Image (cartoon, rainbow, N blue to C red):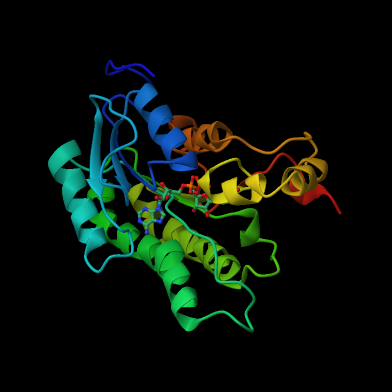
Length: 250
Ligand SMILES: NC(=O)c1ccc[n+]([C@@H]2O[C@H](COP(=O)([O-])OP(=O)(O)OC[C@H]3O[C@@H](n4cnc5c(N)ncnc54)[C@H](O)[C@@H]3O)[C@@H](O)[C@H]2O)c1
């Protein structure tokens, strides 16, 4: 990774990326930095997993009581505003509905949905000042499908679509677009335990994919990079499936 501030397609743009220390968020932060944006990376860990002169880091639980205010204020302080908001932080878990604890249900909905709502809301005043305001929320193929034992996750990711479509309608008059990505199975921290458990997970998703492989974080970062670009200025309220063709297989 380069350590120089680049003059790329996003030169002068200011981005928040949540869950930026690993997987899709990390690849997205790197991609936006490489394209010349300044990036506020937000994650749970004490320290950023990468250093870059145009990157700032904020340790925060996105579902914390005042996290949305801290993140939006930090973006103003460190970056000078917000052009791109990438709500990527997310978690899985909970198990089957019959046995899921209400605490697990609540935590997953808080992180995957309510935190997205609150950070979108807190960022809207700054996004309205932007010449290229963009919201990209991370859904999943579980925004469309469902998975046994994934009730809370599936519910949260379905709801992210509803929230994002609404934001698109409400913010269009300010030139702000709001879209969501639907990643398929991607090799990241979230899938690592399943990959480590044996070859079945990789085989299942590779066979379901038209391209015969799982996704890489960079595959999703590339799609996010497109949605925040000038070229995507007439795309809003859209869910972009980036799954290697998984959802096309009966
Ligand atoms: N990997 C996949 O197959 C896949 C598929 C569909 C959707 N997604 C979505 O992609 C997003 C990114 O996940 P990933 O796959 O890169 O996983 P990952 O575990 O590699 O990265 C997630 C990052 O989010 C951070 N995070 C989690 N909870 C947080 C919180 N409360 N506050 C702040 N940071 C928090 C983690 O510390 C981690 O750095 C998630 O929303 C996930 O649901 C992933």
